[in-house]
Image (spheres, rainbow, N blue to C red):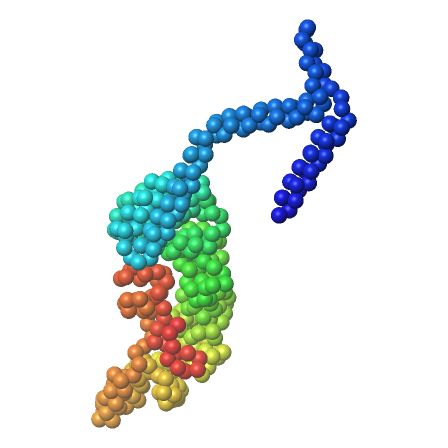
Length: 429
């Protein structure tokens, strides 16, 4: 409406100007040699306007003729884009429906119409993988990884395939390339951490593991495993301390730190480390290491008292004290500790077997001794088993802690099981 009003105004102004010029009069004269042309002003202006319109029309027609092939191409590309986008949508629906053959057909149409774009290459790879054609899928991922705008997507697909094939060298190379293509990507960091565990590169696994998303026990296990691979003594010692700091109750870390301290000529520091670890989580290996240097039986009793004084009521403390007293011939002290442990209701098989040894010393080979032995053996058979290092993935029992279960190849799953907690309940370390 506004445009029509402006057009009427312009026409009115044009008519007024023409009438004004006609009333005003005057001529336009053109002399070329002996030729003279004279026309009224209004007619000259009208001719100039008509000439302008004719020239403008000719130029516009020429420009339109020149641009005609480009317009044809643009319309064809728009049609291909529209049909290609529709084919991509149908391919996505087919993938979601679990029909890879239909998806592959639609993706071929989309690639014919749109070319090898990041979208079509990614969908091609996924459709081929769903159809079980891994080589074709990897070829699409390789083409995608060669594009700057799709490099990370291509590398991610190739990395996933390498991990499925357990080609760890190729997977590590692809992970490094993916991190270079997308620095700081959380997914790449997670995959590199998983690869480090698979390849038993404990130091890299520790470095790549999130500090706030990991339990203290797991971090301690990784740090200790890394120290076992570290050839530099100073760095190994630092990793051992890091493991003990992450989990003060992790017995293997405490033993490693104590052994290094003793080897450096600091036996008191070693014993203090073991005492601190015992206070956090008593473990029979800690007691064995603490009492190893005590040759005299009575001295072992005193050493056991020093070790257990900060956690006196723990079942493991009572067991160590009872066994040490029995070995020293202090049967009264041994019976008090072992009976208190048995009566607590949380004793495992070791306590009842210790009672068998106790009655064998006190009663000897007598009818009362044999009756007591039978009683405690029956109780031991019904009691909870002694704690042990066990792979929580496959259940294999291990003589000592290891970072990897060789039976099933699972890293970080060997833990101290069947023990008792500070409150006396059966626990898993």
